[in-house]
Image (cartoon, rainbow, N blue to C red):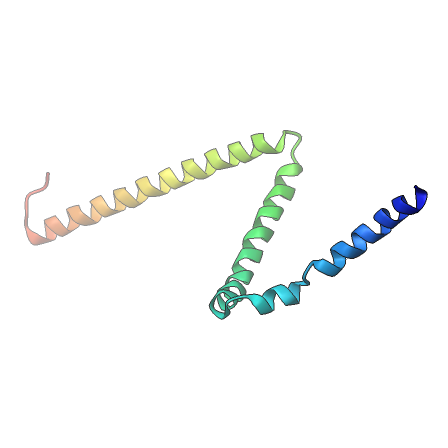
Length: 108
């Protein structure tokens, strides 16, 4: 009975390691187009992951729960985007008004 337990405990992981393909074997089976696409996008995905991890580290410095800090940050970003859109719209309106004045058209 003990021998069977040892056989399963040792043999199971060894069998799993032998049957599982290595990362290089998996890559060699890839379609060449998918392999090229994967390697091209790898840096971008790694950068996104690094940004995400850095944000989580920054959020974890707060005494508040991370999800609360994340929601507050999302609200700040939404407000900043809205104010930027308002400023851009105001600038476009002022440019349009200036062009009308230069063309001699009536204002609104």
